[in-house]
Length: 531
Image: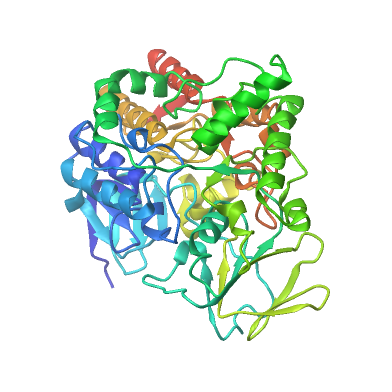
């Protein structure tokens, strides 16, 4: 039976910020005639389509969690945007750039195979759609593949259970007995948000986290006007800084400051709120020097002891290791444990051994009963979503095989042996504010494709040796940071069976931007152009 195959210039996977940016650039800058984008959800949003749990919000401030060329009057009214607002922003941006028409929804790409004879990618979806594309681009996001440990008996629970990234729409938790397994961003945000509603919430903690207040607040019209008056300088700060959050990062070592000065700085930024501000606006070596890091860690542990009234609970909530991995912030998490309907159960040495029809059971035999179990157990991050697609390059070479020693792409955008395949926010990209990172990568990709077309070549891909060197650089930089010493999805070691391997270039967006500019100015020596 012959397949009905639609030929297109480019096929993009993903309906988040990365996907809509790529479609916009391919259409409106590169001038491709036929671009199609595939999204498995029923609407745009990407991460912000799926992550709609109570308390879900960005931890980058509203005015820089958008594209730098989107200068329309702001619709945001708060310092940080909730997930629903972010999804609406993505839809609004797609409409303004006229890319919504290029999307096919409720289809999941299941395979993408490169055909060397035709220099085209053959792409199929789970609903039977087939495409032949010159360029295959993925914007799968860094946190889109939910990870739930394979607890024995997980299907036996008679109540309602789900991963936090699949929170049922319209779920009312009022009066319910709720278990939250996990204390990362989603677990802490959920706990801080729903505890006033539930009958009882029990938080199961595998590892205590360093969490600072987010301190979200309304933004006045006067403040908005001031921000927009200085928008050029704010965006200059974004692109000329390491982590691109729109504030000036500290240039001073925590170890150069007196104890009194450190306390004043930490207290001031704690009260200002924001995890990235606390990590990067306070001092410049919290992420690179373990002694400097300990000064911040000790401050947060002290705050936990101040906030949580029960000494035993406070002690359990105080982390013992380095502060980092992923700077967390939420509202009211530690305060929640002062309420009578909130309990903490530490499972580091007494793990969950099975899920039961009525709840769960720990290693010591202690059993708990619940109406709802929320698995706030994080994600198989960065490369995790790629395992859901059968991707093969030249000579049938599988992407999973190419990444078996650790997922990596040259500059996070291109993989050797996979011609005309490009990734946004792929492994090896920068650890920074996602929106300017997407901007830089998207611009680089379309310029690279444009260079190939100008030279008269049909394909372009990473040079294998250059990609290998980039991977070594990424890992070497990681090993010089505190991030390397903290278990997290950033280091790829939060999922059982995965090899510890930094997923990010941790030297900052400014250095990443310089590297991309150097590559473009020297006419792309790290890439192979061919027919």
